[in-house]
Length: 327
Image (cartoon, rainbow, N blue to C red; front, side, top):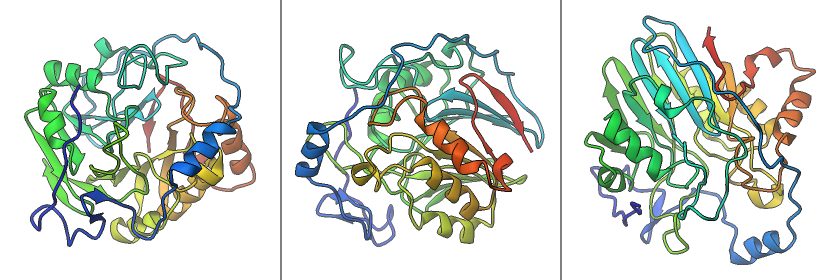
């Protein structure tokens, strides 16, 4: 399994490295919880209810491609989403493994299958990777994609070499606010409020991020993992609205501990409004029990947060394997 290597940013890769110091990245203006806080959480955990296993039928095989301005979104589950438009197929943080862990015999385990069989995926042209946590950077899945699809991969600083070790040849490693072209599109690496780690010793040695796709028919935003923060207002100002936003809304309990790095459903609703996204889709819930919120709690809280809002139809929850066209 590829592990993150230490990154030493230079002026060609970062803009004044305002979020990198003493060999580690950080969230400017945000304090981090220490080991004592983590121990306090672990000692007093009250995990909400999860069914051991949720039986489901895989969704239909997606089309080979979607031409023109039509945007088709398929929710695989967790943070894995298939975006299809203008003949390009994009996959976000792909995870098909049974566990999101450094080993196969322990660690967070799926409570439901991916909504699409791996074998039913169309040709994947592009991957967007947000950070190196095991539920977002799944080495077995990535290795399969490198061998069978050979996509271009966009990743934050520090992940290019691990991705090349998994077999990818075209890897674009970017810092926050850097951009590269993918055909007629711009692919922008944008800030997120989170952290990175794959071992107890490599915390924040690699960067975390969200992604904006600047497409002719409207901007698309994949937030990755993030707490609620000023980034959304900055994105709204820079990109002038969004056709679609994929927003995380799970793993937020207890809020005193998870708040800086994971949004609540209510915060995801507010983020959509700040972004002025025509459509938002909730991600990062209902598949892996990563914090103390129960299996159905994120959706229930989201529904309550939306019920009295005039813009409630702009925030969607999709079942795993469900696909919809986005206006």
